[in-house]
Image (tube, rainbow, N blue to C red; front, top):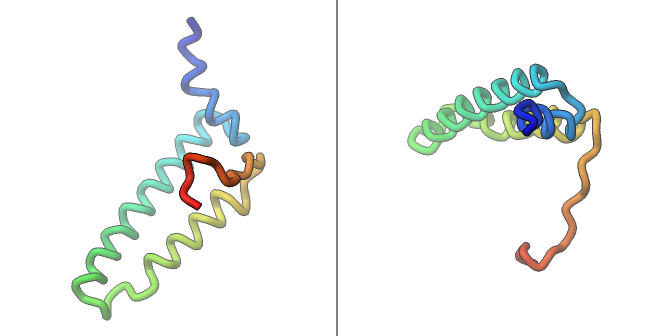
Length: 83
């Protein structure tokens, strides 16, 4: 039984080492938490954080999808997905 494989298989599938993936995942998670809090505040006080959520989504999309080193398979129509 290879105990290291669960820690390295997914990071390798996206072209990262375990350490690189750890840093990126912590950054993404922290960024999403702060953007989520900003969205909650914006819901109550709509004049605050007007573009914070949309900017965070655009930034994270660029970092995750557009700048990815290894391409992932494209998800196509599937019986499990609503049409």
